[in-house]
Image (cartoon, rainbow, N blue to C red; front, side):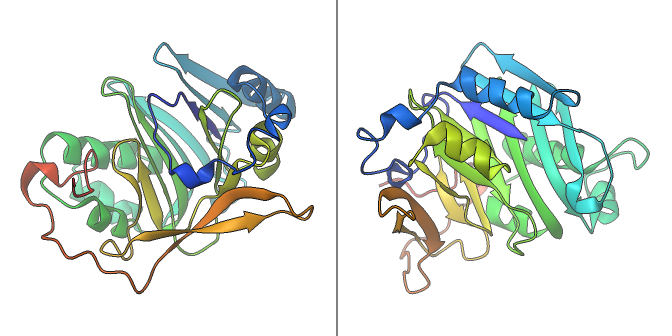
Length: 257
């Protein structure tokens, strides 16, 4: 899967930009070039959707079920789009929890429903909702009406996800490492397992939500500085009251200064 968002839609950590990005800028590509490379790599199974706000979503082999971990799903409901990779082991119980039809629901539709419930009605912390998703997964949600981006990666390490910065500053998210590396040059990094990212709330662990994210410098095989490796700082403590009420949803989970 591939997701590209203009920097006005998504605000990734500054450390994702390589300290030597200007020097290595010739290695980065424009979003349309990265999207073209994705289609060239999947000439018979890929499709994509582009949006006027500066977003593009692409998938290959959607709904193919060669194995559960290779399952790739793509769906949309009321202008909310989801690309899902992997599986949820507790899908049946979550379908009942959210009142969905078991005959027509899959993991991508479940994630959209959870997102919409939290966005519109549910005063539930986002980290607790993601903890309820049991399995191996990566997903990207794009809310076209709200102009917001949400992505998450399970903590078990079975599914990989990568992100980076394209030539003009767009955020690129994909499970294909070579696609991100070739498009983003030195400004790329693995997406940290057990974490979630929102275009407004930033990057946060859903396993240890009260701990801060720490950016560690990355150096490639040539000794060049790359986008940082992100991990949870296990010693950090955030001394603040947790959010309550309608603010504690997927659209806003970070305490404002």
